[in-house]
Each structure stands twice: as C-alpha cells, then as structure tokens.
Length: 87
Image 1 (cartoon, helix red, strand yellow):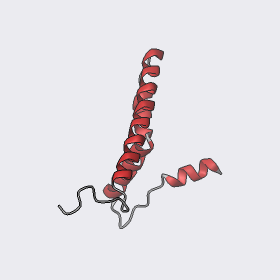
Image 2 (spheres, rainbow, N blue to C red; image 1 turned 60 degrees about the horizontal axis):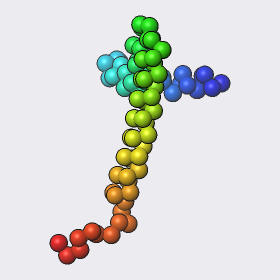
Image 3 (tube, rainbow, N blue to C red; image 1 turned 120 degrees about the vertical axis):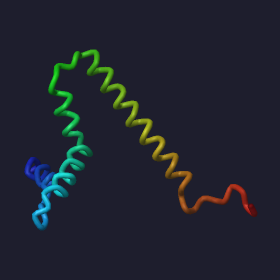
Image 4 (cartoon, helix red, strand yellow; image 1 turned 30 degrees about the vertical axis):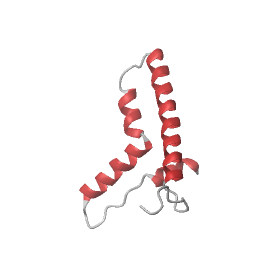
C-alpha cells in the first residue's frame, strides 16, 4: 500500500486536454522529490569518494537551511517587539 500511495502522490490529472500544464506540474513534483536529480546522477558511475563528499555537502546544506529557516521564522514572528520604538 505504501508504494501505491507514493505513486498516487505523483499522479497528475490532465484537465481540458492541457497536457503542457500537466507536464509542467509533473516536472515540478519530480524536481521537489529529487527524482530527476537521482536519475541524472545514476546515469554515470560516481566514485565513492565523490559520493561521500556529495552526501556530506547535502547534509551540511540541510542543516544550514533548517537553521536559517528557524532564525528567519524567529525574526519574522508576529509577537516580536519593535526594536526601534518611535521611529
């Protein structure tokens, strides 16, 4: 069932025969899931040292992006006091 749900999550309905729009939506979904990148990466052999370096870079980027998102959310919160009152 889990495989079926994953497939349904990537299903795009064509409305009014507009295949171009559906194709764009599908490409966006696959790009967000990283499917296209994985296919492109598996097209050629990746040396183990390069794979380790790529995985380490992706992990660092995930940590950096999550930390920056947390900081931005902290600064953009609505209950924040005005740092310069009266300006």
